[in-house]
Length: 166
Image 1 (tube, one colour):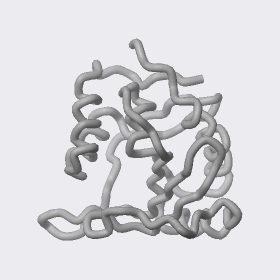
Image 2 (cartoon, one colour; image 1 turned 60 degrees about the vertical axis):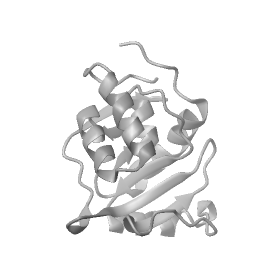
Image 3 (cartoon, one colour; image 1 turned 120 degrees about the vertical axis):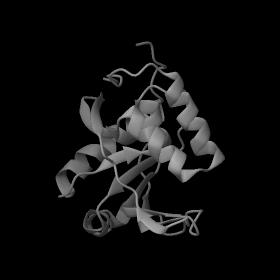
Image 4 (tube, rainbow, N blue to C red; image 1 turned 90 degrees about the horizontal axis):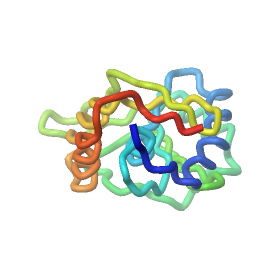
């Protein structure tokens, strides 16, 4: 599979934050959003590293990383998304943690669930991301134009194993 080179800022953010996540998180976590799309091989711009965690792990990270916490940032889309949210500033790009992310749809607030994950290696660190099919499903459920565009990029890729970004 031919893939774009991984964004250096994303690689730096992963190399810095993932070992800390592995040390502090007690529940499974997964990278979602544009970073997950890029790690799956899609040609997308990545501005931050979005992480889906449990509420307990989000609260734990807030407690152990106070020096990295961005207390001025307010996420957009509060009418559509809610979670135990925190944004942390790390080398490369910010890390946005969403504990028990929920999406508001026609049926009210629903948990965002990841049914299938795969692991990619970035900077010699294993990173969990949703499978391409899962990413497409999740992005379509989000329904925003940027998410639908990312879903189309993923759909256009052949359905194989994610890239190894050592």
